[in-house]
Amino acid sequence: MAQNLCVPCRRTTSVDTQALHTAEQKVIHTKTLMAMPPKYLLRVYIATDVAVKLTLNERPTSVDELIGILKDKAKPRLDFEFTLQYEDPDFGGELCCLVDVEDLPEKGTLRVVRSESDLSSCGSSDTDILPHVPVSQRQKTWPDVFPVPTFSYEVEHVLQEGNSVFESSGKTLKLSRAQKNNIIENMASLMYSFKPYPSDRDVGMAADALINAHPCLKELGSASGWYGWKISLKFKMGNYRTRLARAGCKEVSVNTGKRSRNNPEKAHPHSNIKKARRAEVNFLPNFPRGQNEDSLEEMRIEMKAEVDRADRNLQSIEKLMQTTFALRRQEIVQGDPLVKDFLERWPALQVQSQVKIIITKTIIHRLKVFSAHLQLFLLYWLFILKRYCTHKM
Image (cartoon, rainbow, N blue to C red; front, side):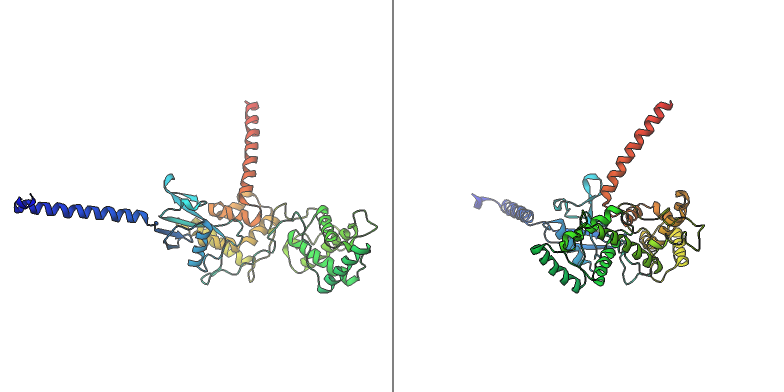
């Protein structure tokens, strides 16, 4: 019957067949694309004003794998620990922390956020014009279990032999003066790395750890077995602080120059000791290498001018605040300024990006724990204020 159709009819039938074939091809192509794994196109901000393009053929198996890919692509600019944030479309593009890799969008924007544990918040590069800022040696607070350090080769050999004899016969080890001094010196150095002014309990914990690690050092005439070591460590810590103060270490030299034979009218040496509180680190660091109070004051003025600008350069502010950290701590510890006056001199402390950095530089515990306790005390004070206002009315 198709043969009896006129020419226009046969032509129409051919066009319909071709259109149907094209539609089938589109459906097959669409199904093929849907079956293929999605291609991820990401724009990653590794700094405030620096972004890189990242193309992935497949989604990473975990967030850690994605972080590793970014570190390899942006070497050496991402040579620190960080987390990732992404713009969540469910919340109008607001930033959310990328915890589950399933939330990674196929096309979107990510931001690199330095981890709280990374204290060197201003990584240096070849283009940095600011001086080298040394990282504080004190990265930890006093541990729950004191780690006994390694002593000299001679002392370690003597202790090993002494421990073997003590296990077999219960005989304690008699050390020479030089050997005992080596033990006390290394113990005091490690104790200072955690806390320059350890409490009586802290020193006892260190002495107990020493005896547990090396039973041959136990004192038979002592109830605890380490009381004499505790007294020796206390005296050694005092001598160690004196040597560091004479060497110019501000963390301990701030407490020197008090009452003495030549200055009997000054304050008592043990009164108003300026020392770090619990969980506090970087109490009073020295100035950066090659810098003094005048040069850091110039940087403070430069930082203040940068904050007053309408278009702030947050990266420049961060570098200046990093470099002048020691000057701020000196003003706080030695000057005891009013909060209002201090914030006028350092307006960058009110910048949101600086709050987290300052807390992590002075408090070693995680910021979430600090925020939780801060929230608890805030509720407590609100309760007191509410009761006060109720009784007053």
